[in-house]
Length: 521
Image 1 (cartoon, rainbow, N blue to C red):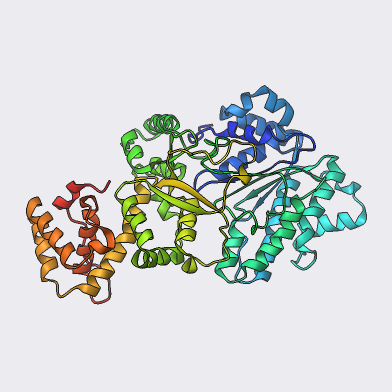
Image 2: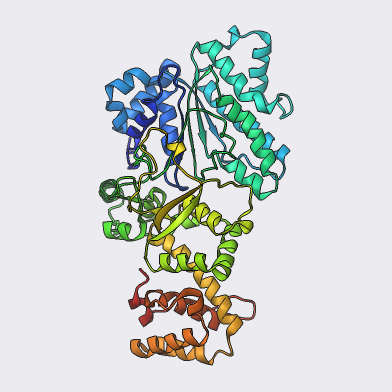
């Protein structure tokens, strides 16, 4: 079968498997920006571990072999773990709602879907051995007759693990995708505390001192404060971020992996579509998507964007196109306008300079983005992937002994904008603020038109002099600074403000001008 080229990250499973020992019950939380390959890693780990009927097991063994995956070549891992565990993979991505009742209903539906997947893997083939109450519980959970009020949602996972132990005589491996999504949704709609209390019981209590649990691998984006998250009372929790050596390359692509993937895509494209050559170069991918630093100081590439660029045969800001937070964006613009320290950080970051920030160790989703202060917002955009730690000592957050214990109340880290595609988002934020200021302070369009004419005539010296004077006259440097590396932002904002029609829309198309030679990075 001609599979689409992939990057093999399966050896990262060993980070979890090495702790998956009898009576150890590890709980690993892996935090990475969105679209970094977390869910794919979780899927492959589940497929590797999950028991099944002989036909299903053989199909999965062939699948791992056909893809030539590294984990399948690890004889010890295959012998000890392949198809030798009972796995419940719970996807919380769509556990959302405008009320707590809606959220609970969505949670139970997500649990039902996870249990149905277990059933398709023959995990309940001997369900006839259950006593009547447990048989009714499992049957009702899996049938269309089930309603969200048929069972106590807070104990549903505990009941499932107990039933699994009865049927298989071994504990359950629990996996969670997007563990932070429901809490973010609850905060947005004003019932954060209620949601945290619910999940503290439904998942937190389930993970705590549960003899029917073998271990848990949980992934997400945001780190909750150690004292206010729904996992705060769970023991043996280890949190792994980009600054930890364990799992350091579990998600995202290294330079070698990106180069090899490009070569494989090019060979595949030449074979299947010889009349449509793949013109993207490694330098293109480097420019757009190389950004995040791992714990060893090596650069990592955004996998979502790299894969989409290769599929569409052109680089674009795919990561930004995959989602945004309007409330957070509005608050960022407000902080740039009103908070000098926040503005200074953004100015330096956009100019390509690393910046030292504090991370709020007690961060919580309890606050709406519109209410976050500078420290909270910088923590928010850091974990969301808009910033990357850069290698300036002390760099590693932990030494693997107990990662979760090392994030202090105010943790200082040096950061930078990860990549050009994310720099584009910063430039859009700052441009929006500039446009607003130009319109508030403008005395007419004559000055703007004069600057545009100089740009189109191609006179770099005259253009820069005139633009510099405009920045000074309008006091725009008070907002963004007078660094000439930022002039493209001033020009773009100027063009937008000068050509905006009465409805607030800019009618202009992109034009070529000498400002492009200034460079934005």
